[in-house]
Length: 287
Image 1 (cartoon, one colour):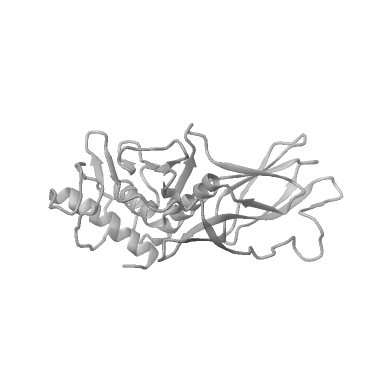
Image 2 (image 1 turned 60 degrees about the vertical axis):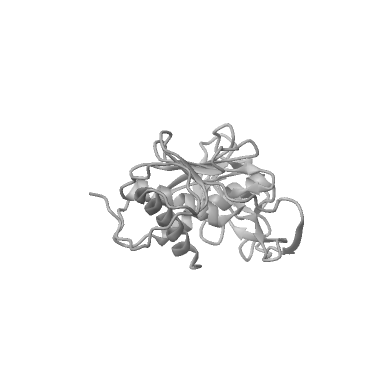
């Protein structure tokens, strides 16, 4: 039996669940629109090519290329005064494809600093493609847009960096990073592979009735993309919903669904919502 050895106190939080649809989600009050009044920017470190080179690629005598660079996204931050700020965050463990030319595409992943390097790339590649998906160990996740297509960013191969600034594209990579942090937080005794991969759907047209939801029958999250409540930039919401995924993919999911606020609810619903909130706290280290 696939069980997690977790200790928690069941509590219920503001939100709603749709039992027949296998959904568990959170509504709550709308957050300030953190896509608008961005008040402070922390400059991204100047991470250029490796020492001794002056571009994002080198060409070997046999005509093959070594391509290297780094990737960051603009993370929206909330402050206690309801203001917002920004900082550049590395895009970690994401899929990178170098394509173009006459040879098949070459694929790698970014490291924990957002760096990537590919050697032996076929002659004359044209572009770098970064996708909001990651796979390895306990992690198997992709972030899709309103049409079910994986979020991505591209740059010419001559560019050493991919800087994702767009509100929704950056939110996709923030959700991806939250999933990576969540998998890192699992204890050593947890199963090495989930029973199903995770899909996180997010975009301006994603407007689930429950606010933001986990659909247990599909192992899919829907994050609100409504202006004023753009949940992919709200780590607490993302991690809470991923907590439901962890419960279903690595343990036993028995959440019956149904609206839940600060009133008493069925024990199974309270346990599941309490688990998701507790798991969020484990990942962030915050109460």
